[in-house]
Length: 123
Image (cartoon, rainbow, N blue to C red; front, side, top):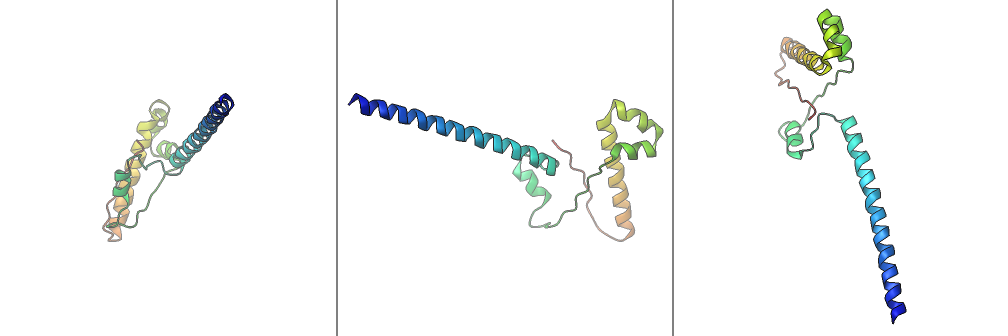
């Protein structure tokens, strides 16, 4: 009788270890996926409702623009930006995106396009 109980305890411990290892593996995979998601879509939030607002059935298409060289653009535009980019890179990046949004809005108006140009920042 005690042999059966010992075997059941050992079996339960092994099963618990296996489940813990599987949980740890799943947790690591989920962490890698979240990191990859942030890299691929930095403007998407963790809130699915907010993501649905970006693209929904009423507006099935969305154009996204990511400026890959905001600091270079800021330095070309103004010497002050060149100085500020080392002190406040977030502010300079935000100003570049505001200017880009303004330019896109103006250019689209020239072609008679009615569009809503918005900025979405990562949380």
